[in-house]
Length: 104
Image (cartoon, rainbow, N blue to C red):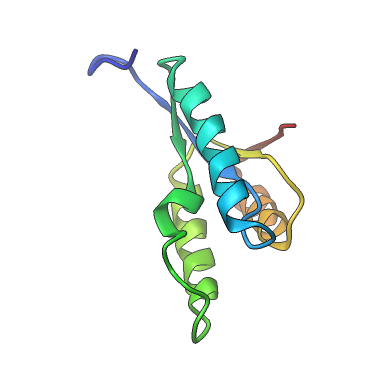
């Protein structure tokens, strides 16, 4: 359980989305529920932050840029897939010195 006194580790959850939006969002949700139940991790899921936005007029690139800004505020980036977006997030995290962990 999370308490106010707990310093949470901010983990950016890098997970595919576009290939199967509903299923991928559900998988990411399961990951986030499991992580937050430990009481030490604050999972940050862009799938939940931005999945309501359609890919119109290049908006997905705007979302990726927002993700880059969020990654800079995180302690680590955990990768749960191998999509184009995941690869870009990993590349950016490596550039700014955010630890990357590959998960299955």
